[in-house]
Length: 352
Image (cartoon, rainbow, N blue to C red; front, top):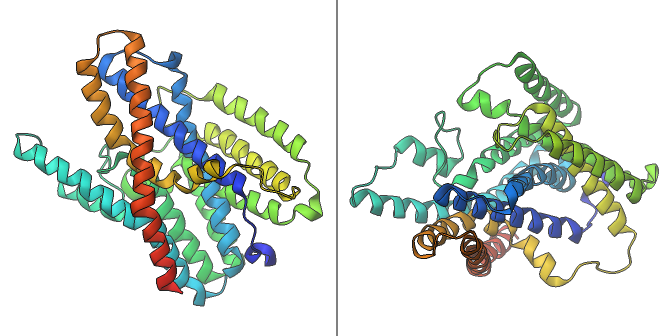
């Protein structure tokens, strides 16, 4: 994996990451509206915005392997790896969790339900919460999977390439065995054996394919066609009623689809001589973490207020949901510019 350290910037993946974050934002706007008013927007198709989460998992497996794959078996790189992963995820999570928790404490003082200590601890540390309990920032449930993947990759970095393959094989075997037997797991075992985790492996595999793109001579057109077939099958099998609890076969289809999309896009962009995307589209990808983690608080507040003030008409529901999306996007842009980006710049200077 000697090419893993070669500096390659794929702006297309940043753009796709931004689009995935927008998909999740629109999904939540329509979902919150439906829960508040019992009116379904976009004919229910907004549920496919959930698939942005699947793309994030595949992309995470790709990026971590691409950046740190050459460091497997070299424990001296572990501190730098931990430093980068911590500052990429936790500072913004700490800030937004504290803000949301403060709002919950204010609501408690006004007669609401007090926040549970176990939920607070799991929200800050990204530890598995008791069954049925979501983190303070609801969208942060995906970060629990990210933290698990980062921890396992750290172990692989220390153990080396061959032992990393063994660890990966055992992890996948546990996931497949759990779903084939229909076992009911809770807390950490459930997190480890969740079907979402196979999508990290698709990202790892597609990274290896991309690094050997000159040997295999992948055709972006044919790879895209196969990707669309898998994506269509995954969308057809997707049951929005189950939400995030899709069966393993759905995650396999979606993981394969997004992995192939990443491969086709990467090979296509590497064959270009100029930047294929405008700066604003790349910025959307840069701000995707702020958008993903920060949008729900703004959406909830505005949709709750708009549902009370607006007339009970479907047209006005679209106006309220659309306005809430734009306001949430603007707020997250400010969050990125004033909080996340300065934090990332400071962490890089401090490391240097």
